[in-house]
Image (cartoon, rainbow, N blue to C red; front, side, top):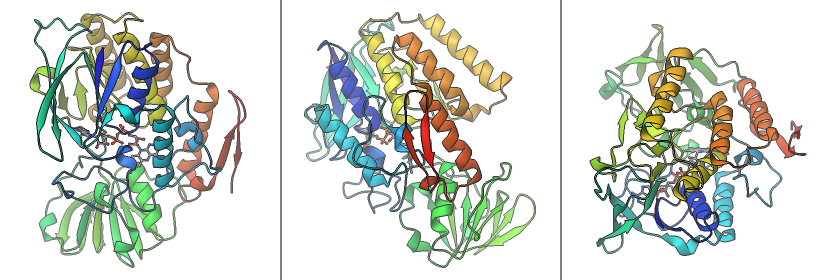
Length: 429
Ligand code: FAD
């Protein structure tokens, strides 16, 4: 079997690793990567907007970013980080780790660099929805602009989901004269030296940037409509309500009627899913931040020889990818039963009802995991007949989240080590 893997970030590398080593040579991956290196979002670049080839810059890293998960839970389950004592790492260490993974599993030889996927289309076999379907995959050589096409038996979409910024509508924003920067384009805190900044959005990126940038600026207003964060914050970070509209070249009206004056606006407002290379015939659509129709958030129900890896958020990405991919490979190799289309639709509807109607989650959070990831991981492990994650991983992750909740400023100084499959040790520095 020939499997096309789109993207050589963490997900695409993990896909190549399992296709190469978990199929007893019955399947071969070809990884298509539009840039000239592996690592995806972990490849820091000072560039923003378009690169020298006219391609949108992919990475969302800023210069001083440190991971928000400790390496002890961030690693792939079969490949711990090496050569570092710290738990929370600078982004360059994560790139080194992925390069190490790639070398260790000898994946480079299966990667076509500077090769952008431009179209993916199932070959019409009467819509059987078989896992042994064929796909036409068109790719462009970014150096010569030549377009080629090959046929594959399966496709794994690993193109990353933190590159297409979501911009909120802020009435009157055209009046604002300061910088307006989406977190995707945020690179250097120094660019905002001594300014008053408003950051819109207080999820992972918003809080992370607030703490980081506070070291260089005069005042940060962390603007959001969630319940106030209970965490300690730097003295010059104030939580304020969300932005109602822009009033003047440097002023915003907030949803509680108060006003703030600032020099720059940072939009930490998230990202949109984007699959510009999937033809309509793939049957995938995105509505209200939900990618449909998917079984277990990754398997294309209409064409189960296509998987879309890592769409979920609030997860431990590497092990999450690893479990989805191993299940996909087992389905492909017919080592586990593939549910029928009806069963997959029924399962997805049940999950939708549970999340939206029972738990009261918002439609746009359909792919959000958080506490739901443990049952999900266990479910995938059972379906794929693979070892579940050891209990220590969940315990450590929960500890980090509770630390982070109360101390966004210090939690990245903590050092963890895993003692055994059930226990970890923590040092608060
Ligand atoms: P990406 O890393 O985005 O890789 C996708 C690859 O696909 C890219 O190389 C891209 O060039 C390629 N590609 C896209 N389209 C095409 C095409 N048409 N043809 C060919 N190639 C294509 N996770 C953690 O575990 N811990 C953290 O601390 C953490 N911090 C983060 C901080 C930021 C600012 C961001 C943005 C993300 C963070 N993440 C973190 C999540 C991170 O996204 C995942 O850990 C993981 O690296 C995502 O891997 P990926 O392979 O899905 O996507």
